[in-house]
Length: 246
Image (cartoon, rainbow, N blue to C red; front, side, top):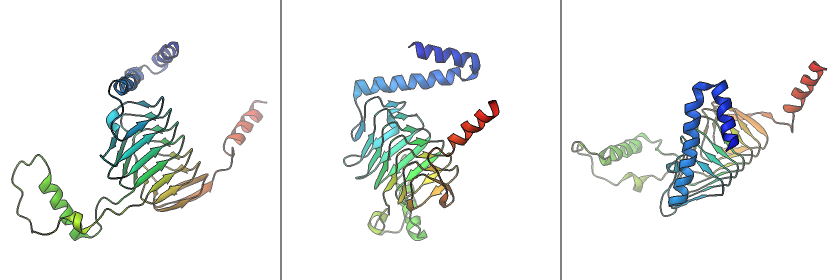
């Protein structure tokens, strides 16, 4: 508790405008823990020890086959959203931080340990809408006609088979390795396989394919622009400081 008080005091002294926001964030984590203790995890959701979560509704597994597993010591902020539909399984490794990330799965998404997501990150393993405009038209008509609340009777539509009988949601599993950092405003789409230690640069769109470990990915579509050497970025920086101060 002393650590919390010390942190709060430092925040008050250095960034007083952030005190309310920080207190609110802390309170949401405490409330999330209380709710888990009282009601347990939702059906199809498994969270390991010391998972800190602000909003239990961030994790939604569709019954009966959907499943979400979050590894121990992970942090799930309130703006995170993870959904597993059908028989999909979403696995998130231990020590991960889910910020403003949305993960939507109908096939399967596996994320390794110590995953870090920045703001507005989108991960999806299937195509939600047909490319064929006639099928997409039918999908939209069915969606609009079946939407609730219905405030007026829908217009008459042509009779025929439903879209589910004509088109399936094509998809391919997504795999993200250990120690991956995905920057702001990035999308990771079906069939992407990102190796351990990769960084996905801001604004990138990662499409189907294999991306080797320790790579920096950038662009739309993303490609490997650099290989990360072990300690290559940190060691020269420290050395430069030592030379300057000596």
